Image 1 (cartoon, rainbow, N blue to C red):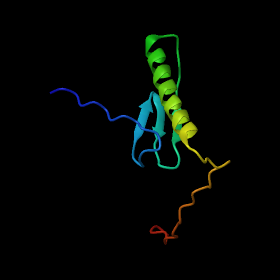
Image 2: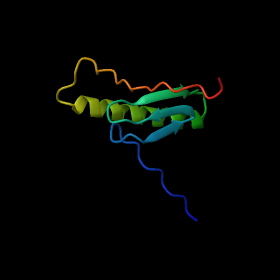
Image 3: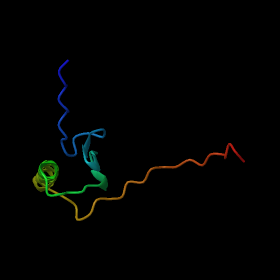
Length: 90
């Protein structure tokens, strides 16, 4: 059975896209993209490919941001409402 191609990571296109490079994860969002983890580079071909993939993704993010006509100086923080729940163990 042939492998299915991984969907492209399109910056700011959805709330569910994820790209993984080594131990680093890029989580897509329509207003923010989050990077988590770490990424090591050695002097080898595998590192070269990871570096190229990271550079491509960052270039795509920059292109989307540069294409925005009216970027604010700083985006507002998104706060998620929290609900306090009773401790089931105490």
